[in-house]
Image (tube, each protein chain N blue to C red):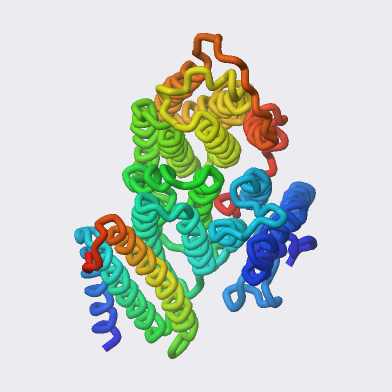
Length: 494
Length: 101
């Protein structure tokens, strides 16, 4: 137990408590409860990050004062703190944005979708917080399932047949992923008698059962993270989902399983990492970057373009695996790869949330979301188009954006590690990203200019712009601020 | 005896995985998922009987995991079946028939 250790625990409890209270409160009550909890959640997340940064050590909370292996621990290290803050800010932005779609105006009857949306948003928030702070592999399994069960209904909120099909497809991938993960847990428990990541980092031996277990769990988590070739559920899930749900799904849900994968590779088995397997993960990431970007270039609908862009950007997250695994004894570039990977997760969360919400505003205003029909959009919707462009800069990796800092760190780390092939992938991916962002911007900025500038100011535009600005400003932070994400790395434990 | 249970669990996992990957009918895939879950719970039971790494005669922790796992698998199954029912209802409304799909 450390001082302030209760902060991450409260960050998990708060949304869960809110969800339980929201269920009997009806749509209007649920909306009020959600909005009231947002500032508290942000305060808890920022408090956790500040405490981790100040003490330079992870915050640990033992539930019921029972230490592992008997009890369960919550452990907020730098990675967890960064993800807590990201989740709190993105959920806040999405909740404020969603008031226009799912809010219940005074005197209006309560809608079914509104009643479903707010508790699901809270459940998702609680699940993502649990997924980043829990240290027990089985607790992480429960967090993964909660994430899926909360995200799946958001995909099919509109209830049309296409969205139901997409939700079923998503659920099938997620269920396959979770049973594989659960089987891996069985092997790990059978071999070591504990499921606590911190204890396992000392116990794990380079034996066949460990490798089989980690392989099974990795395959399961890849299906949930939507890494190519297990990404097939992601684009259809986004196609019919409301913009708020798409933003949360791309920004946060796929990151939850990514954080667990990082815990597994660099927590459970730091000493026995398999370089060949890490190269395979990196290769899948590289394939995702290139094929996902090409697929994005070929899309005709704006929303699907952004969805395939998520497939590509997830690929970058997996470049940190071969770089870190090859690194024992080379702390300098391992630290860069770690920071680059985490920063990519954070900056992509903000940029992609901004993109989906901007695409939603554009689609509503011009009545369709075909890229070919975007002409004149910049005159009608200057702020969302600007936000889309700014977020695009971050995805491309143009300085001084957060995406640039992430990709630059991965690139230099790859060169220092002598694995120059990843550097080529990063550069090529940046060019392809530039291509599809240009397609959208060029379409939006054309138009004969004779159209009257019918601006219909919408206060949601400010939320979208704020998200895009955050994704860019992340790149202006001094590098010392990124020291936070290094705190408590288990692969460095003596 | 324990080994037999372990092997049976592995066989169920194999059958379930095959069904989940090869079958396309949603209901069959949901059943395959449950078959696979059952196999995994058997593996957990074997782990518990072997006393796991902790050295107990019969370890209660995997049994607790099985219980939680059953609850989660049940919740997942209900969600999936609810979706299948909704899709079937949407199909019926589209075709204007009352026949089962």
